[in-house]
Length: 218
Image (cartoon, rainbow, N blue to C red; front, top):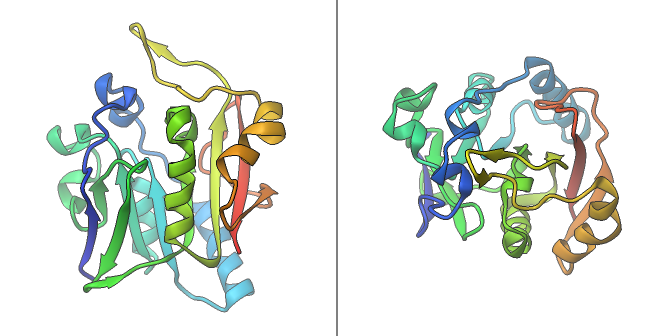
């Protein structure tokens, strides 16, 4: 594989988690039971032994690496270049191979051997709340643009504030009721994405203040 990412915005300079690195310099979460469940899902629904996987806000990149080791085309995008600069976690080995920096609220495209890649599965664990409310529509637009028809987006979304040394890391803090009653209608308007309850047993992040969703590309 020769994976590349095309973007004019390789770093999310305005992101609070880049300005005041916190999760981006600590997190490196994975879950092998979740990976097993995704393999079972795509084998049973689409008869796929491997598939294309994209993780947004991938931090240390362990989930991306573990999907890649199972034979999948696996890509992680991280808004901050903290882990690149500090050689953290999986970045020294996988930078510009499977792990890339990119502002995911701006246009991005993924290629392999010069051909554009579309994804069966995109995830974002404890990421959506970091996006500025004015950028949420574009965030979901670019998810839609990079998903295959029938592909799914899975996410956990925090409903609490997170202030670190005077910097509010969570910019889109809404209750689950607010998301379901108004926000999803606003940010998904006109997009070919159907909102579903999270249907799987396993999760990569399951923080106490968070809830989980699935979006399906139609």
